[in-house]
Image (cartoon, rainbow, N blue to C red; front, side):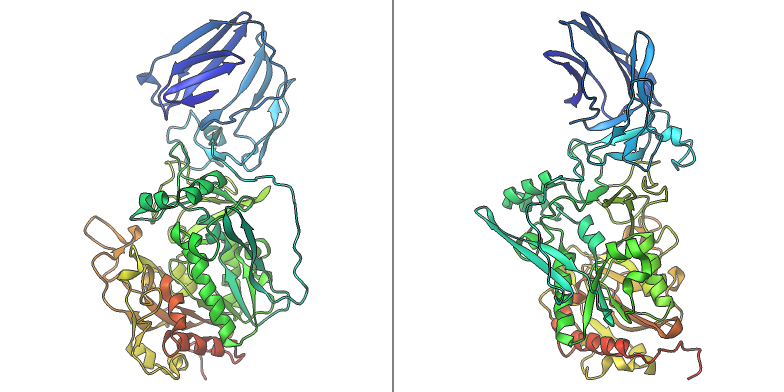
Length: 568
């Protein structure tokens, strides 16, 4: 069965039946073979069925052999619900796709039904033909979500055989390594994240969920098509490997399931990662790695996937956790782990912007697959269809953590507020009066300038995507904004969730980046930079770099921080 160019085509050997259909509408497809007559009938169903016609066609064919393996949805883009087979009027096999919603296998019913195995993780928990707004949570009415959305470009596991193995020596330092691959087609580096096993005081949190979300992104505004045209070979390779969550499937639906078991071609240092748009996070995180090496502190690495799987135990006895430049995508498990770490006295350095923004999850029987549902609000290239906001992995609501009751301000004091198209709209930070508070003086030891991150290789330190404080969203009342960006150009705009109407904003001054410090419970503390571009300012040895050196040195020191209301 193939849906193409407005026609549904059904092929049996050399016999082909074809009828016109309306894209985006439900139809009940009935195929009957009663030799030598092959019939195809289309019956509109669902809420817009009254506007469509029933259609029927038939063809005389030679005797047909219909034995063999059953394959449903191969090469097909669209939703399928309730496939059923009958012989002489009696049920032979059927499958209810509202069953085993969180699994990659669907049990069958009937004397000849076997379990269907889903290949390449088509999307589940999607509306079926009977959905008309009765429920928005598939757990409450699974019968309304008895469909599977197949895409002809789904790819969750290349199933490549192992051809070589690489084992790091036991004394290898924790960090980011790369396998160098050179062929006639060119040079490529595949990154490896080597986790620490020595319980260092400082851990870098590799944003592997965010790297995965941006993996193979062909979105690079404002000159997206120009960039794709300039790198046609790379763009086509990304399409074949499965595009990022910033792209759409060929049928126009958003890509919300992405996998580690496929090539991710832009998570690599150098031209590829910068030219084809997307892995700003990975390349800028390498700057943070360089800074950690310069400090001389013994540090190790842990990933989002480690936190998601093991919780706070993955952090071992670390005293300081340093994030990447753009830790945008997090699961409930990773947020819980970081919150537990800070509640128990851990010190957190949030070295970026637009962090802890979208909720993601992984599939229980396919943990290499990450799920994202872009629900309701936020900066996004596509939005979920109404009624499909709940993840198939666990049934929980998807979307922004801010809309799910856990704004990043609760965790790191600041939250995403505004965005520019490029680094040219960036601004330096300027010290505030709160920098003179005795609680924050340690940050500015040896720093004489009032302007911070003025000239860096990425532009000024504050820009691209920036975060601000807001006590209404959970910023602690004792937080100190020790530096703040200057006024931005007019092309730096508030994010969607900051708007109430087309003219009125939810906050009086949302367009700013706040360098924020506050103490936490049990002797811990948090320092948040509030900008994706801040990692580029680490090279400023007497300004932003010195501030972060001072922060790391004090955060490593076991002397506990004290909440302002606590006696000395």
